[in-house]
Image (cartoon, rainbow, N blue to C red; front, side):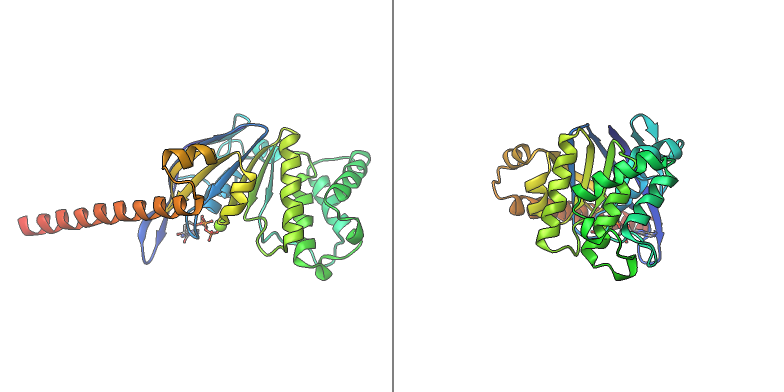
Length: 266
Ligand SMILES: Nc1ncnc2c1ncn2[C@@H]1O[C@H](COP(=O)(O)OP(=O)(O)OP(=O)(O)O)[C@@H](O)[C@H]1O
Ligand SMILES: [Mg+2]
């Protein structure tokens, strides 16, 4: 189970000064559920997922994985998660098999359990045809499969996919979505971030729409479309985003005018 409450991450930036890349984000993901994090570039998806995977510390708020706090119990958290992004480092000189085996060993798996696990994974992800190909000679799809196998090797209950289908052809992307559905059937708790609307429509049980660090709304596709009285998900997405931007402009302008008033008073 993933539990996120009022999660906030602030950054310093030359252009924006101190700003919130993630702003008071809250959600829960249960076992057997695929939770979609949908948002445009810069929305804050990767930042949330990197906090969940213990790579980044939150500025405030709490995130737990199976009850373990990501900021204070990172080793316990790492044991329970698998993280798949689209830019995982693949070692040029190691074969697909060796790489997944290596990560299994890092997780403390023994040779007997590893062999059985690897056979199963390579079959499930259709990786047998390139099990002996070294990283340096792999295609994007092959590399992505290796990073998925790496994330699954220790059979974690929670899986985090950050734009995992980026750069994959339709066949490989379809295969990945099937694998994710199988993982849901197996009772895993899954987060899937993307900016591709059709993927969340097809795959996710619940969806959070994220923009400028905030979650604008969360629900099943049916809940979202009925709440906003808009059957077309793409239209719904854009209207939520533009309403949020307008709201922000209004707030910013009123901030400007109040500071102008303050200046005048001085
Ligand atoms: N190390 C950093 N320092 C300053 N700002 C950062 C840093 N990392 C990310 N940001 C900013 O935080 C915001 C959120 O970035 P993030 O990568 O989480 O977005 P995203 O939703 O994953 O976008 P994309 O779809 O492009 O992957 C962006 O405005 C980005 O510029
Ligand atoms: Mg990202």
